[in-house]
Length: 246
Length: 246
Image (cartoon, rainbow over all chains, first blue to last red; front, top):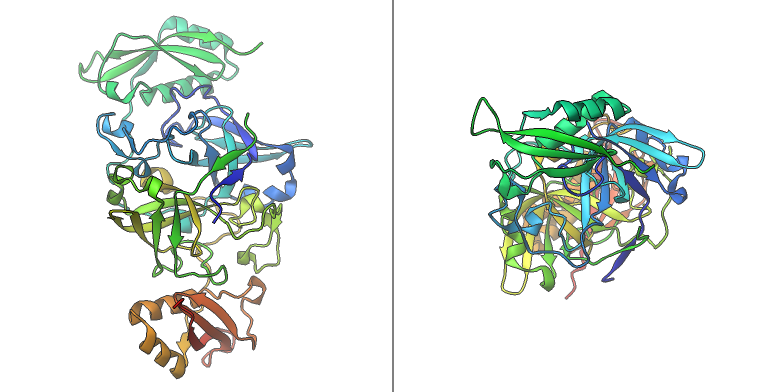
């Protein structure tokens, strides 16, 4: 048996998530997030995507290319367990795997066949900008959708912080510089509602200002007590800075 | 960006399907089929599978290692379309992909932690014996199970031939040589009910005797008219030969 296999990316993801920090931990947690898969020229053959637009969802098999080589770990601390308990890497979806191959199902909005390049417009992605794509497969419900499964330590969707607000200055900035205010406002809110801080800070308030590269912005935020309920955290966007390449 | 990624198998599948012919075209079509994933020693660390047995289903990412190198095709003829119409490779699950990576969800029956090796007992697999496994991930229902999807040319499960019978001689052979008659009898029936012949023969009767390597046997079968209904095919197992390595 061969003991090594070589794979080449078929394309690359353009994503609003410009860095690992704050990327949702699963697809479709931030349904709003729009992205594009650009197929490389060798694979931008209209025949290769014939019939694909008939599918509402697709599987992406991709490379966790921001994990340093040989950094797999037998045990990981999933965010779901607050970063305290350890679980086996094969019982998790941690990127620190023996083979850093990721798996995501995303919504397929359209297939754009250009003269030079084929682009797939997708929604609900959880991939960092620039992620190499190894394969695209149709989501087939009778095969892939299994109900009443046992899912170990995972119980439904993770909690969200629903109270995400903007300071007047941050909101004003976004109004002036956004190309699509409603989309960008909602996306920032949805991403932050996942509480992107390290897992051990879950349910805790701290006085640090965090910074996340999202869309063309550096979005700075703080985690506060909510006024109504001292045990529930709220997130406030305190500043937005344009970092788009000019 | 790196333009090539190297992956090493973490383990190998032991499967009742000893050759490509007659392997079900999706997982869980032959629910009966039992297999084992044997993790290689480097990955047979009990820590790496901690918590895994809490999941009823797992994803396998594997290599279609029986596809010759560089044999990808932009267009494929899926069996679902009778092998007549072409569809894009990315709209199909054909093994002839740019990167021959497969994806299957299977039932996880047990995790066996031996002194030297960890084995995962699985059911409903659709993998050829000896398939290299690249990754194992838990099936997480709130992420992976999507309902009311659009699935292009795929409409539910493929048709089956329900009328699979054995000649008295074949049945007698199986009774004498099987280690677990009920399991082996049911498995042979379920595999053949998928009509493993080439797609263009679907709904057609022919006078050829087919042969499939399954379990420890060479199972020979014919496709016949059913007596009740001339338009419905029936499959008859005509001979079973033991091919187990002695």
